[in-house]
Image 1: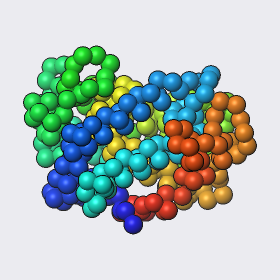
Image 2 (image 1 turned 60 degrees about the vertical axis):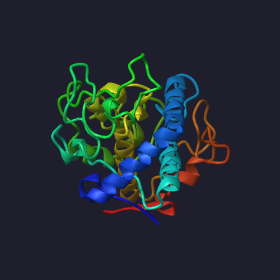
Image 3 (image 1 turned 180 degrees about the vertical axis):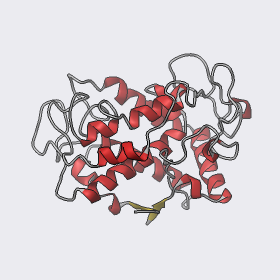
Image 4 (image 1 turned 120 degrees about the horizontal axis):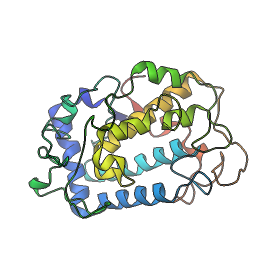
Length: 274
């Protein structure tokens, strides 16, 4: 069974193995397929039309499957690798070890946000951005320039206390756990972290930045915590509803995956802490 660990607890060997697997997926072109897929689904999701990966109840199960697919790709490179998660309620500063040159890099940024150190710096020759919003081919970040602070544990607990998964109109105006976690309402958790990192993380092609996977692994962990706190609260909507995926609806682009299939993460992996 795969165990997902806090990135702050990874050994030097575990960090190196994760980075090397990511770089290998990039070298073979597999990595950019995930960037393209996320870019497509974010750009086509709409508050007033069909929506799958964002602004919708399926935000959480869609990303759970997306992460599972990526993790499986990593494990085809190195079967011992799993997705670590970034607890941004604890590791909250640009000087955190997450951003060190032996892991995500970003301790040194150029004037335009170019990442100048670490394995994903363009100068290293192994991380050229090919899916983007402009012609710049290097990874960019802001680290606190867009918003000054990451969400706190108190912010997280206030969202985990919400007992209803989602509600009409099932978009960015909804008042429920999913939308507050996604960040369109309230204290803003998921979206705020994207803006705090800045650069490519603020775009539809956010997986260009490998920290995307660590951020979403933590969002997934928070969903699991909410499920443990609210065992009687299920996925909503439970019945067919226009423009969104119901409990037994199909989660595109997968042909045979539903939110019900993604409800229990313990079928696939566990976390190092409850």
